[in-house]
Length: 324
Image (cartoon, rainbow, N blue to C red; front, side, top):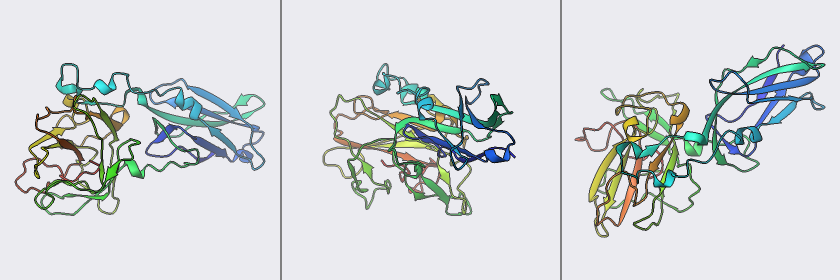
């Protein structure tokens, strides 16, 4: 019998800074084996980035905490990230992909007998690790707060998306309020998960990062085009207006620096560097021009689906699946 992997890093992603344990067991089923062997591979590479051996404990298991290995292969976003969309304001700088903040890896296991290692067995699962931190006790790490759950209302013409669980950005911002968009009685936009609030000056350059693949309901799956963040609505208000003074929609597509879609509603599966999207969100580097009369604005991440406005020509929801 082969080595059993009892515990692996959290899916769909985990944080690098904090415990990342892998527990191996079942060494007693391998005649003569005296150590467990573990290898870590970056996806697409044939040479391992780590090869570790460990004797079993008194209950026959070995716990490998690979956090130091993962931390060596992730890094902060480029030091120019907060100037995103500043230099020349090119269209393809409105968003940025994961870059060095994310690593995808696989694990392989084997046993050792007197220094001789058996053949390694590679697990088919691909794990994702993000350059972020978590508490030491967060094993397993709860990814639900960062990943919305989307279902369908089973409409006959165009099944509309339903947000069963809202998500928040990959941010430690703690200043949040309830969904209080102005003019709610006649405003089709909403943020049911609440709103992240930032007080900023006109010359501030800011960014916000989202883990964008959605979780799909297994009971009532949404439209196949629902994969991640489809677009961002940007609503600008003056100090006294109760309805948006300026409304823009920026599609999450490769031409804008995001993706993986090339066009709205394409439904491309999300993997690799596309798993996180960083947007230019500050007054000085906003993805759209800031009106001189704008006192505050909302950025609303939405998924593919039916808008609240029946006259809309854009097949995206107008409710934020991630916090506005």
